[in-house]
Image (cartoon, rainbow, N blue to C red; front, side):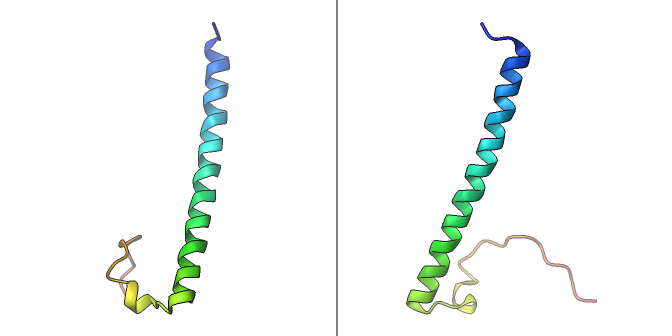
Length: 61
């Protein structure tokens, strides 16, 4: 049976791999979206109502 410290180290290693995998998947998805927009001529204005809100914007002063 593995010790607590060994299991904790494995968990931290897996968490790091999960973060890297998520970054890679997001980058690939963004490339695909950009390619589709370029191929079919979609613009931000055409898509803005279909995309999630994302980060809240700061109000203009």
